Length: 160
Image (tube, rainbow, N blue to C red; front, side, top):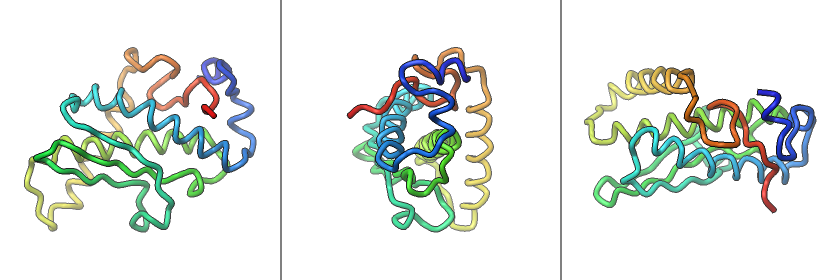
């Protein structure tokens, strides 16, 4: 992964050093917008219009890293991912968590047609967590260009 991190202006050393919040936010925003189409295609959700936004930690339910809201009839969804202000200085860990959140929320969308009672919600979350983990551990030979693995950050510096 380190070889890919050194290409395009973002080095492994840069990612391990503290960065200004503006840089972290720009990198996070670029990253989530680059990985969303890849995972949307991989999960065969191309018939959905999925939007993605960064959200402040206080705008999310406590203990969560994101959420998704959808309209099944219109086939539209919006994913909110916790922004960089909710993460410590480690950019690599932040980007990995953001990818886990994106995949997790897209799996919710995939399961949107299944009825879930409030009593079954924790079981569903448990299953989604395991499916997310399995997907992120699979062979990533089809990973989008600019990524060394499913959990690797983009090789480019954030667009201005």
